[in-house]
Length: 204
Image (cartoon, rainbow, N blue to C red):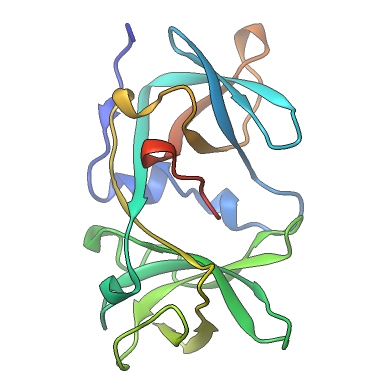
């Protein structure tokens, strides 16, 4: 690619990759799909519904990768974000858990709406003191003013956010971007993109 994409630095993720708009209630504030084309600074992304979007990467775009992690990585004190929804029993159940860099500790702390189209919420906080987490245990997430007990299941995706590069923006990889205003040529310009490493499909 003949364009400059800065490596994500710890702390910049908070402002670029998961902006506060993602946590607003109402219509989904992000677009997810699979990269089906790369032309210069423009990615063509196709949603599961078949809808496509042209995404233009800003010169200072931050790229973050989500890489597979395990329940055993959810150690007490680890700062995480949890996408959750009500389970069959009505209790919060995790669709996914992502481990955030320590420099992001405190970012967007607490419980907030995430994607109303999926009826999900996002809880950010530190893993509480508990027995070692497993894919069938309850994850306790603590934050200022409270805590949340969220069930993990064998279907819960667990990832770690790491710095990415332009080389991760390959055809076939799954991405999530904030929705934005259309720019020149109708492409949506973004300064942030989250990409599943090596074809990982994001469960957020």
